[in-house]
Image 1 (cartoon, protein in one colour):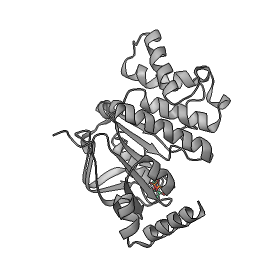
Image 2: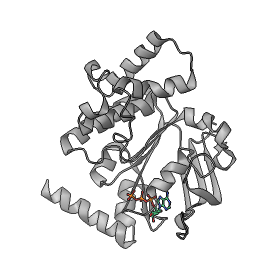
Image 3: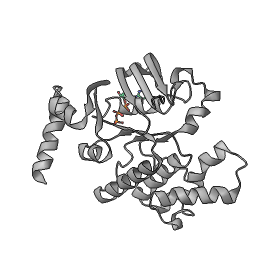
Length: 270
Ligand SMILES: Nc1ncnc2c1ncn2[C@@H]1O[C@H](COP(=O)(O)OP(=O)(O)OP(=O)(O)O)[C@@H](O)[C@H]1O
């Protein structure tokens, strides 16, 4: 039997407060499974703990990054690795196997590097002496997989549109051919048409490569395009978990009811 891509049991995460601020219990008692090749989408209002969960699943905790969330309870295994066992110095194994597209990833690209150099960055982290021609080929393929033209490669982030920057960030997250892709609102701030194109390209790459994915989204329509599996977060907890229809039809939490009503109104409008 193959190992689950992600397995969390009763997981709780806390941010320690900085400069005297109180700590924040961002995630409380969450359990979830993602099988190899499967996608789980997460919906929830601002501040419900989605990003904290995404960070921990990407292996970014207080042990590996500054101001990362601390696992304070339960367990979290990602690609067979106990996230609690990661250390700053040896966290590379997960970093190289999990692609992470953080919130506002496009804005987080290095402004001093071209799009191509941004995408190549993880390749050189893994293999510092990688042949430049080989790296160029891999970068071109990654750019092309997100349906960006090769003319994008020498451009700097400020010369690209927001949608193009998001796609460069996704290409960068995919360049090492990760076994798991974690996206934190990969299409936020991008207009509806471009959003739809990006989702199609992502789905295409996933079909071809078969990686598992955790996709944080802010929109039920987007979730339906990505997957049939949904978790809904509210106040750090899961208030719905299962197939999209099952969650929306049987969920009793007011936030889930509101989501279901919104979905119905949209369906009527279409
Ligand atoms: N680095 C941090 N240090 C302290 N508290 C944090 C940190 N990051 C997030 N928080 C707090 O943890 C809680 C959960 O935040 P999180 O970003 O995970 O929510 P979210 O659902 O992703 O929200 P959004 O959609 O706004 O990003 C919030 O109360 C937030 O203010």
